[in-house]
Image 1 (cartoon, rainbow, N blue to C red):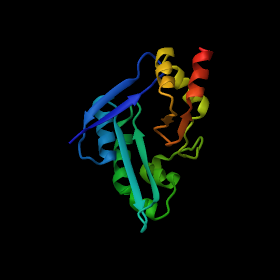
Image 2 (cartoon, rainbow, N blue to C red):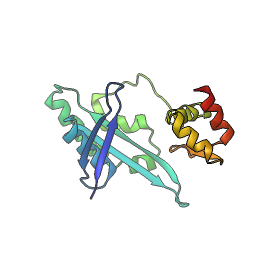
Image 3 (tube, rainbow, N blue to C red):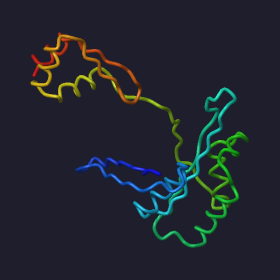
Length: 178
């Protein structure tokens, strides 16, 4: 039970929010269902995680394929056959296949051209200046209340868990700059 909610900020008015009920609770199945129901985009998503003996993630990966409008039926049939032929992503990862190898297995004789590759990493872009800007957005009155408490005001980044401490003097300095 539950829902999958996707928020896409296209830098326009308000972010797009789409929600669909979970289909199976498997992330790839639920992402595929989301694209079919919410965005009406034929999509295949397959994910795999190989967990090591110490319960750490040894390797993880997957693919997301989307058809362009007007894709010919024979291409769709070959992609569907390739997805079945390729099998489980975890097994391919266990065999040491790279993302390029996995995609090659899936698309088969259709072929694929890699225009660019980018290393994926977890990186947070927070810093004290960004957090200070967020704190200023609370407004002068709220900042005065925080400063009046006379104790340190910690702000934690939701993404990397870095804690930024603001002393009452820091807060008073912000108020003075407004």
